[in-house]
Image (cartoon, rainbow, N blue to C red; front, side, top):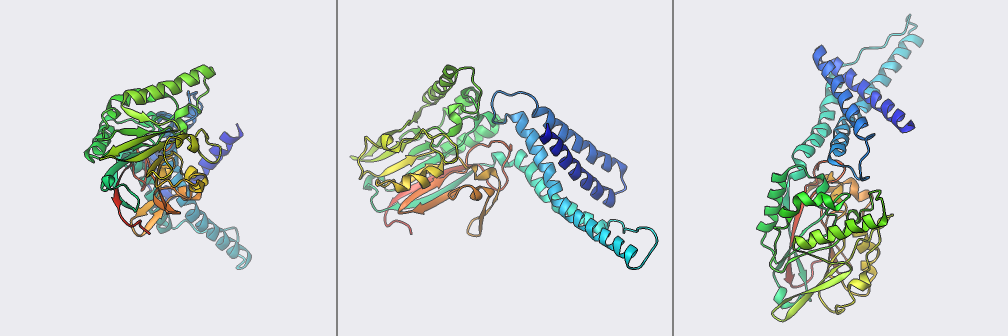
Length: 409
């Protein structure tokens, strides 16, 4: 109950300053009423959605949108308040000066300046509009990122071998079949040799994937589609009536992947062969730092391959690469991960800026990294979770070409 009281007080503070800015720059009563109505509807919807029971702790689409609109509205306040509160402090100081120093009668405080409110609203409109755009367009703004990686010990038969990676589908969040179909077609258009999915097919339950099974079942690659599980795939965010029900949910998800033609690796390995040469595909179950499930067993997954094999490792959480993989005696040439989503918010200008709040939690949060002669690609994710959108960190399809040659510095 206390948290709702604190939320309402904080929200009322934002609404007050927003209303002051609107009132200062326009005398239109209808615009003022519209602002108040919008504030009430957004808060009311959020309170209703978050007091209604839902099966899983991960947000469903209705809750996600309630959260998204609230986040956009609060972003207005986070920009408005410092500017207008700063002006209020100056106004109070001026009033005290007039009262105490010049000895004027009464307490006079100058009125708000219109241009300050205009600047504040103009600045606040940027994150507000960006978050709304992220919900409307950004979450389905699929892009293909192409990389070429050189390896001295890559088998000759695999020189020029092209792989694609997708991650974090989060099918329980989807709300636009045509956009998802476009994304699937875009993956298939890459015409790669192998396709890898690195976990989090659902948000809460395997049933979330059923409406999308036919679309993802059309994914194809010459040497197959390989996958691993992510932390959301185990059903850990649902209060199941029994252990058996939870186990059945995981079995259903495994069967779904099999039905879609995915080769699910559960602490296992496979070989891909060409012209008598081979590379190893190693897949571990989820292993994550900071309270996330640690079902991954790298030694078990690699027990049937040779230490000198060229290895591609699928591991959902990049903290696994940092905490365990790099410390192994075996050399894992390329690890493919996801999990971070790049926080679905950030600024990326190739060659100039790469920033997201995700970097405060994960050292390796998006893109290609190299440590100790080993690479990792952290995919930004195909879907979205929580906030139903993306701003600056767009949904990603990674395409990597493996080349025989001197390893990049």
